[in-house]
Amino acid sequence: MSLFIDNAIAGWIRNAEKNGELDSNPYKGKTIDLDEYFRTPAEQRMGMKILKDANCLPPALRS
Image 1 (cartoon, rainbow, N blue to C red):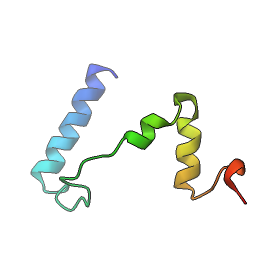
Image 2 (cartoon, rainbow, N blue to C red; image 1 turned 135 degrees about the horizontal axis):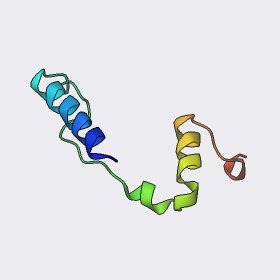
Image 3 (tube, helix red, strand yellow; image 1 turned 45 degrees about the horizontal axis):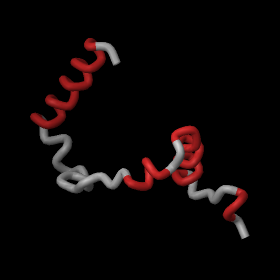
Image 4 (cartoon, helix red, strand yellow; image 1 turned 90 degrees about the vertical axis):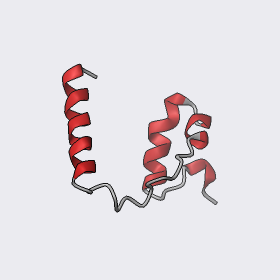
């Protein structure tokens, strides 16, 4: 990313923290488990993420 975009995002995050907008985040203080993400082959990650978020099983797993 460009430095301009990085600085803009950092500014938005700082403002949100200062205004307390991030206090109600249900994931605050929890670790993110990325094991499943990295077990998925890189070329399949996007497709698998879309299927998972849509609550769909790939054809190979349907019964």
